[in-house]
Image (cartoon, rainbow, N blue to C red):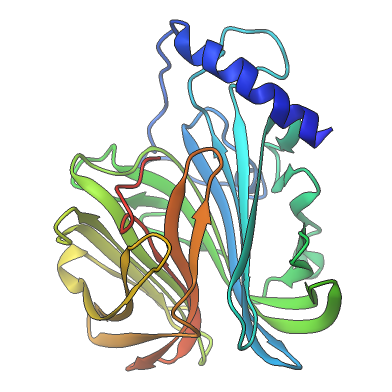
Length: 356
């Protein structure tokens, strides 16, 4: 059925794109909005772009491994006047990757339109593309996320259990990404999720435990004119703290906007403004596939703290093709400096300007 859906999609989408489409009004992320859960774990289909993003470090019998699963929802502004439940007004796609111990990164992708091989819920986190799923259920001590991915080269079936409260980024979940208020997203993170389950490589499953980081973000406008991409890091610190930091870059590598948030193990939250955050490349890796020069060794300053990223391996570039070709670096790193921990570093826009 998934194959038939993808065979039909190229026949339908060009004619829809060529036809004159009515103007679509997308809502902006509002500073005054107060997020409510579990509702806001669910989808926000009125916004242009949304993603549910989980990364983590796993400890296996063979050593440390990294994993990533991201579901994207896009409202492209097509066929919104069609009554059909399978009109391509909501598109979903998913990227998954594993960095095995001592072996090259493996990644895969899936795509589909809502109600035709893919779907999402608006009342809670429940999103799927084909058999790939991310779902939250339970409450209190029984609250869990369940991730399921299966591909020919790898797969995982993981249960993620919260050990800390949600971390609302920015101002109560309103995260500014540029000088104008419209350049913002609603953004919630869940650091230090305890992970338990199985990781499969070439059909051989093995037990895995570790820690994960969950991000859920939705917006209609993020990148300002002249922006080509971003650098982002989410870290589970050894002492129980959590650090998120990002910067938006232009084509010269200059920072257009930056922000960071540090929640200490005791719960104290410190936000760092653009003038207190810097990303300085110290070492680059050149992709033989895309030719992009990724600054995998970054010195990141957040207020009084300075850290340096140490990748599990340099070759952690993802080359995706659905719905459009895009190359970005997404990999497990450790850090050294005034803070210690491990997490994921994301580098976008180095193989060409990122288009959301």
